[in-house]
Image 1 (tube, rainbow, N blue to C red):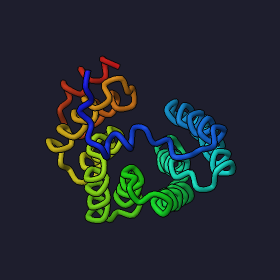
Image 2: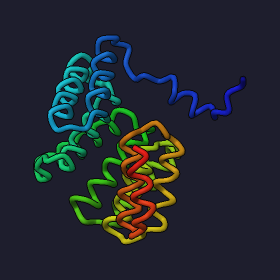
Image 3: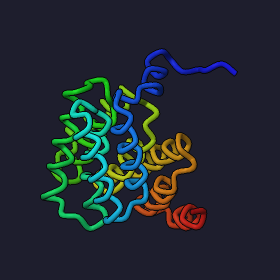
Length: 198
């Protein structure tokens, strides 16, 4: 079977971002806990990402993980005024270390829309993320949720969240988001069907 990835996509897939195996292992542990999506697990993820950064201060992906963790904490009970700025700082540091990364732009886009109420800047950040990596399922999920909740663009949001689900059909978080976006778009029957699947 031959790969259909472009050369830049192949570099992204094989790029772990650090030569330090301990930092990489700590990063993976952080991702594991971040994906569990409880406040205590996200706090644990932050600890692992910070430990990875301590092992390799130039590890851009560890900063991306830190940005994800801080930016999702408000959805699980964290204080927005504290966590969004921390997420933004980590996303910007990741971009300083590796400007080719797409996902920090999604973190900044979410922050602009959800915390800064600057929808034009938020949308521009999301578009930059999609330009750099059109296959970032989480970025498509967040964008769908934001345009459904804050911009009232329900039909576009449904297309985005369905695209996210196609990119990562095993993600329980994205499966839940499908139902949430349908609910925001007032497609109640579809929301019920989507929620019963997960």
